[in-house]
Image (cartoon, rainbow, N blue to C red):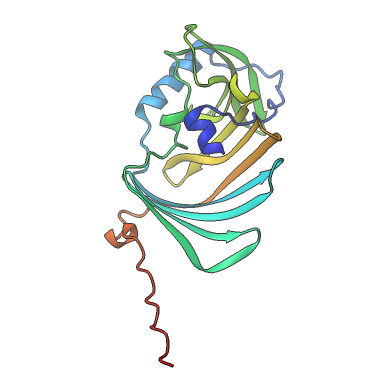
Length: 234
């Protein structure tokens, strides 16, 4: 469901806004937004990576799955490792070609050119300070979904959390990001939307990011079906 929310504008449920500290920031809101915009432009996304994620659905249906994906460019191999706590001895493998990866900062980071950033306050965690901004679209054109808030990391000036909503389906949601190796990647996503029969909720948790220099071409070859022996002669 979250992929549909991101791609087709059902949305994920925003996490509660972080507690806002009264501490002051030495940077002006305008300079923070300028640094954020520059960080987005300079961002280097990984071209080759592997990651595992857990999908949990509740509400109108209950489901838990564990997956491992391999990406190289726009090619993707998705292995289903476990369903509802039962680990498969032979994972279900799906191969995709020319498939966009939706959980990148480049795809999801709100752009200063498209939104007005209103400083909502700093958020301190120990010595680390992030900056929370409420967002409003700069134009009134219809949108599939609208970003409502971004938390900007005080060191990288990249988004550590974004919230968004849609008019359709009563949807709302959030995605969080953090550093792994040299890259800024998704950590979690949560979605809530009204669907026939009630409210559907879904959560994703990403783990075990790896960034190899390359993957074998065979990674993206469809697995061969096992040969079925002919029936025994009567």
